[in-house]
Amino acid sequence: MTQKTNENYSKIIPIWRFILLSIITFGIYELVWFYKNWKFLKVEQNLKITPILRTIFSIIFAWSFAWYLKTFLKEKNISAKFSPTLIGIYYFIIAILWKLPDPYSLITIFSFMPLLPLVNSMNKFWQSQEQNLAQKKFTWWQIILIIIWIIIILLYVFAAFLPEL
Image (cartoon, rainbow, N blue to C red; front, side, top):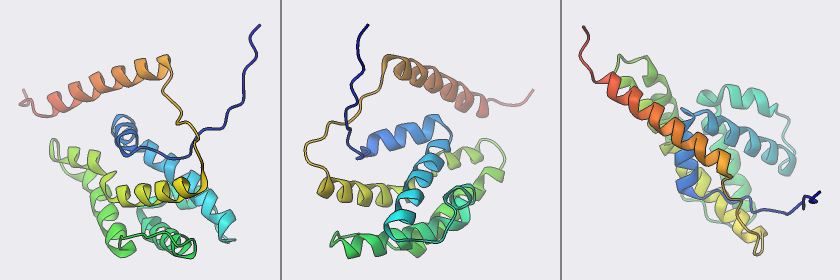
């Protein structure tokens, strides 16, 4: 029986991975990211918040998250060149566009875009904290699931542009 090693992996999330996971999960990965980072900020800044509620209502709390993150990074002397207000507005607007008729509702697949400066800023923080930690790679079953989801998404996008009978 092989023994499993408990390696530490980097908390840095490559931008391409964040985008891929956001798209193939239809934005659910963004919620996972929000939850993990709300938990982190709650501890680091001693916030009196409930991370799960902030995550569920991320459409409203994206601005708040960006503001707390920018404050935290400033305390750590890490530059954060983003506007919490613009991120909050942009995330709110793109999130409510799911109400548009097909195929226009597909624009919400880009809901990850306003979060990219936040992901990049958190990556800068983790780079300053972690020394030479390997990034976790996708496992074979995760790769298979990614391929299946990409096929499903492509079929969905294709069907959205088909004329109705």
